Image (cartoon, rainbow, N blue to C red; front, side, top):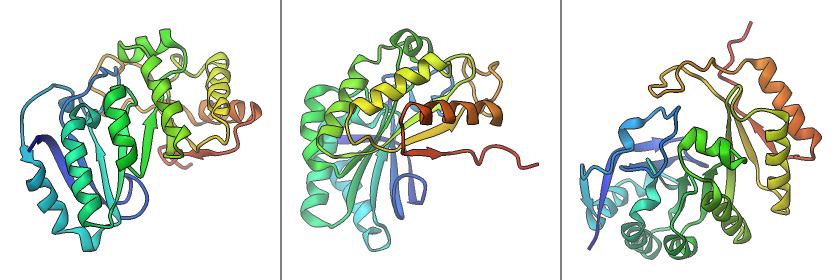
Length: 241
C-alpha cells in the first residue's frame, strides 16, 4: 500500500469547496510561483507520512460530520498513485464527495486514473500567455490548459481561479485571451477572480503592490465585456471605507 506525504490537515473547512470539508494538504509542488503563500509545501520532502489505510481511518472517524474531502497542496496530484488507492477506498466505503484542488500541472496518466474517482476539480490558471506564465511559475502552461479542457469535457470542473497580479497578468490583452480561452470551453465554468495581495508573500513578488479595488473592478468589467457570465468576485480583501 502506498503512503501519502502530508503537510497539514484541516478537519473542518468551509473554504475548500462546497459544504463542510476535511482538507488535506499534500507535500510537494511542481510549480514555483513567485507569490506562493505556502512555500514550505513546495519541496519534495518525505515528511508526515501516512499509509493510505491510516489516512482513510483518519477521515472515516470524521465522516459523519463532513460533506466530503478536498485534497490540495502543494500539488496533490504528484502523489496520484496513492490518491487512487485512497479515493477507491473512500468511494467503496463512504458517501463522501471527493474534490481535487490543483494547479492543473497534472501528469496525463495520473489524470486518466483520477478523473473517474474524483467528483470535481478546482483548477488554477496563473496566466493564459505562456511567457507570462513562465514569469510567474517558471513553467509552461501547456499541460495546465490541456488539463482544464480534459476536466471540463468530463463535466467535473467545479471552478477556475485566476489571481490578478498588477502589471503582470492583468493587461487588457491578457484578460481578453483569458476570456477567449474560458469561452472556448463551451458552457463555461465559474471563474473566481482573486486580487493579488502581497501580505505574507515570501518570494520575489513581494515588491509588487497589492491590487487596488479600481484595478480589480476594471479587470472584471473587461472580462464581462468579452462575454464571461459566471465571474465570482473575491473582493473581500479590500478595506471598506
